[in-house]
Amino acid sequence: EGQAKAAGFLGVMRGASSVFDQPLVDPAGKPVVDAEGKQITAEIAYSAPNILQSTAGAVPWVGQTLERLGSSENRQRVLQAQQAWVRAKLRKESGAVIGADEMADEIKTFFPQYGDKPETIRQKALLRQQAASGLVVEAGPAARGI
Image (cartoon, rainbow, N blue to C red; front, top):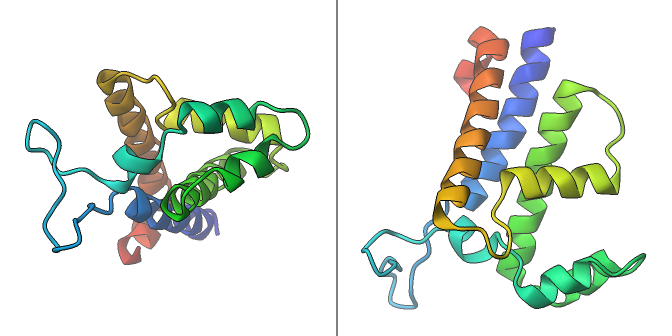
């Protein structure tokens, strides 16, 4: 039973990760690359809120609504995937209800934020990989089908 639960949470995390890892393409279908020739993914392009979204998100009571209104569809997709990933991680760890502050803290811990430097962004991606790897071990043979 424990392996099946871990596999379920792992599946959610991997599904969310597929949103982050989606490569960007231009209207002609060619990969969008950075100055170093590295392909840009949805995570790189849309994960970190811009300064206006960060500011709006900090407004008490209505901040999340303001942030969503100021976000593109792609940003909203990435944000939803971030929340799904965090829910899977936290529910596996505690099974408890996840509060808004805890969700926000986990997103800041595991996903790029406005002003993060490239090495910090790489470190956050590594932390996500380590969390998923832990679930692979815990899921045992049940992880094979995911």
